[in-house]
Length: 70
Image (tube, rainbow, N blue to C red; front, side, top):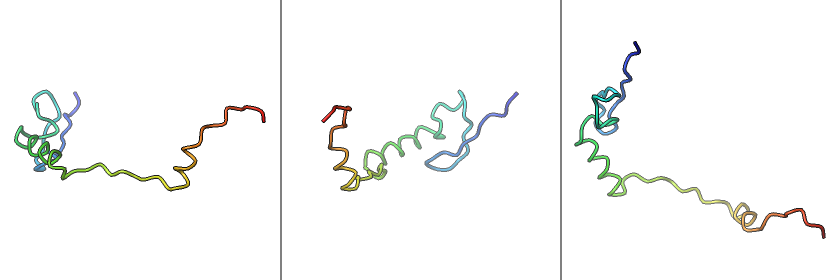
């Protein structure tokens, strides 16, 4: 029988067994889950956006050559 996987709660760091007995996984409790959700809602977490260089953007604006003869 395999050992159950144990992870750290992203909010408080306590150990959580990954399985049916932990309904809020990867969080240890509903409280920690809601704290994390509130952080996203308050925009404390953000996914970074990478802006393309001007050269990359210009090349992306041009339609691809479909092999037509000149």
